[in-house]
Image (tube, rainbow, N blue to C red; front, side, top):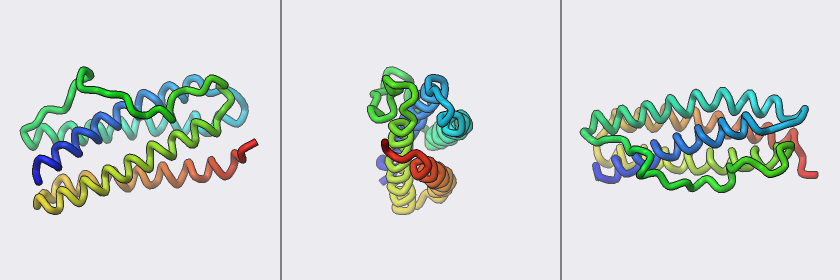
Length: 150
């Protein structure tokens, strides 16, 4: 069970760092009047996702594991790649929602695995980050309503 906990912590760590990269890139490249609020939100989320990675990496260290370096990284967030049309805010919003859903799923699985492994500290980390991810999802669902598909 503890193996599942460290596997999920490692997956989440890598996912958070990939999210940081994609949110930062999209916050830089998006253009247009409608993009400003989304860009500001992505900028703020970059800091929060980086803090999540820090928490996960520290928890791995506490469990006598090492967080992975970049050579262990395999990109998976195809829906969060910067859009060719830099005014396509909607595609970024959809990418963020997909990333948040994936994160929520991971943190629920981590919470469950940590519970089964009798690891209340990791359970706490999972719940803390899960709350943030659900808040991000709610915010971007709001953006999605404001940006109807043309």
